[in-house]
Length: 371
Image (cartoon, rainbow, N blue to C red):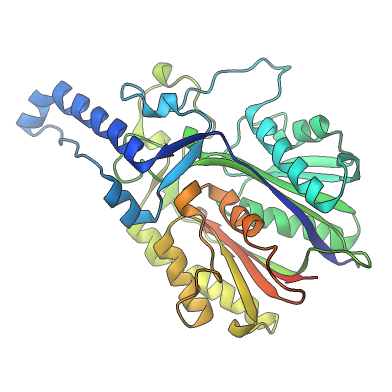
């Protein structure tokens, strides 16, 4: 048996930023156009008038202040309100692969490794650009990595489920060095014309390198991982692929991201809190032993609730860093962004807990130790 260790992490951040103020201007222009075009039906009561959004509502509801996106122009076009992701030729790198490779190179640089050292590439993400060939195999080829590769999808828990898979394979000896890459193009699945959720998501790609621990290695020892799922329809996406031709697609609200927010809060938060408590108990980890919580970045109120349950008190900002205000919800990548940006300050021997959760329902956690 071998001890798995995270030796590197990386984040690819798109260059386009949409602030809440920019988003609200665009959304409200769309609302005005819609209400004007459907004035007669609204007066008759056949359809409801749409209402404006505002930046204070977004920040209070989520903690989000901005988001990075692959395409800004299409999202902010009131006549479109969806990103324009142009089709690429079959011999050109896919968008997911392009983003993922950049994140992996950053993780490799931190670990002092080369692509040839990788013998397992897992593309763990909630939104995949195509069904096949696997994005992971394309990334493997673009990197010049060895071994094998495959895609996996457990929605917002994909990265932590990928971490468990990679750690288990390293521990068992079937691979020596694995990379878990999560290129999340969430903007293509979001219904930007829905006031209740038009602000939630952003785009990003993350990568973590997991390998056998050797003498003198530095990084985060993966002490244990735990995953759980329970079926629910309360967070759902029927589209299953990235929208490229919105203008030619039947305009169906049920094909994009939908959620029953109140039900999700009521059901997911206790599930996640119990999951983390049981994981810590099995590993004899006390609340006072944890120096850092890297939680899924979906909503600040959710994280505050979970952090208080785990620690038995309100966490200090340094104990539970949030990146929501800058990145918004980036699905499975969120907890990895928090880990990548807020982990290097931990001292040798410090413990941290990484956790993500979401549609499925699903929840994945990992107890880590700085070595």
